Amino acid sequence: MRAIALTLALLAAPLAAHADPVGITPDTMSVTVTTAAGPVEIMRNQDTAHRLEGDWTLTSRPCPNFCIQPMIPAPGVTPIGELEVLAALQDPAIVVIDGRIRPEFEAGTIPGAVSVPYTEAADRLGELGCEPDFDGWICEGDAVKQVVLFCNGPWCGQSPTAARRMIEAGFPAENISYYRGGMQNWTMLGLTVMPGGGS
Image 1 (cartoon, rainbow, N blue to C red):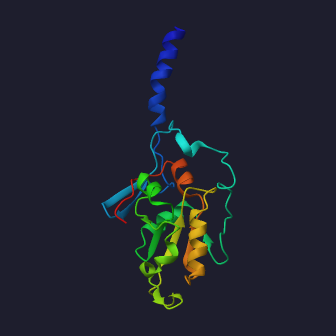
Image 2: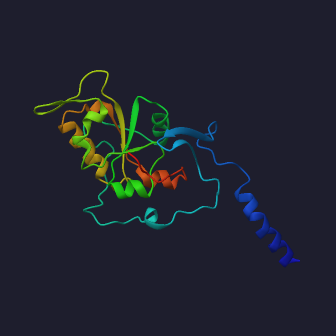
Image 3: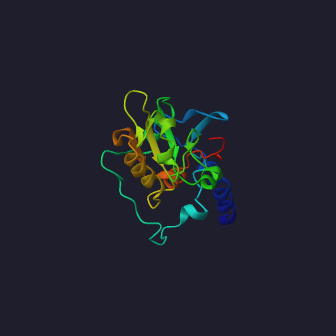
């Protein structure tokens, strides 16, 4: 009898894992964003038994290079979370920037993000509405975009470095939002990730 009860419990476990949907918020199951490859639906992984694997499970990386980053990488920059990133992805006036090196972007990124590696950020301000000047950039007026920067997570210095370099080159700090959680938090929450390319 105990064997039958155990067997029934084991058979019911996968059903329980999928019994209730896993939403982004109580009122939002998914968000559709525009990407170079067409519309992509961002939602959370529906497998409630899902576990992280690989590098995203590491907790102790050597510092330097993997030191914990501040919530605000430079004065004037606004820290944000996942819900604000999702809203930014739906707003055509905001550019969501993956500040990681290109191979990391290509391996997997937030749908709708564009690749601007931190090593190139200060040189690509023209793509964000700034005008070239003899001494750098003029970043004034309504044409200058709002941006969201992210990288691998709280221990990744790539997007904080991009923010500081952009500001030093003339980009207004108040136009920068920083998603410190980055790919580690995005992945931990089971949100959609897609290979990056074409940007």
